[in-house]
Image (spheres, chains in turn purple, blue):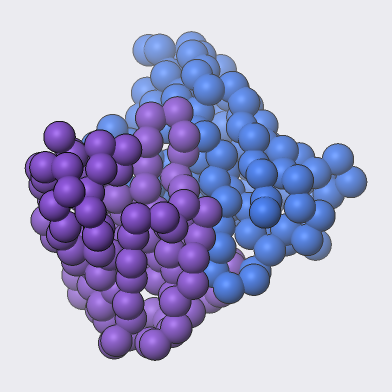
Length: 113
Length: 112
């Protein structure tokens, strides 16, 4: 049971490039979320999903897209990377909506130059 | 949307002393309040949580209190140990969708 996995661990992009951060979970959780973590800002919700085929925006969705074609996978796409998107990105999953433990992945550290 | 404020941003205590971290929230519909611990370079992990129908919850050296009227909740760590050194985040959720709103974190240092 691997829990929540994320790839890559580190990534450097140039401004304007696009990429996809991968997230997968093997716990059969319905609920998945993407957060970004910046110094002094805590964790901010980017997008979340309440099940396969259903996604919604969080606090800071601009510049990011998500899809949820399967229960296991929840990729985050950066459409045109900007330096303001330099951050650590965490994916999380849970089996209850809005309560209970969120299981976080190990994170992806993204630098946009 | 919900706004969660957390204080202090940094906290240093001597080993064996107590540490208290406070959070306030703005949305009276919030009904679930977890606390996460994040060690340096690691992922956040849940350490304790409380629901709005409970005023206090304890788990060994950790306790959380909730005051719904004042819209604030606090984390209490007693008999602190060096391994308690980490960043602690509070959060709040109304249960709608799967939206959690986090505080900005408290960096706790326990001095041996």
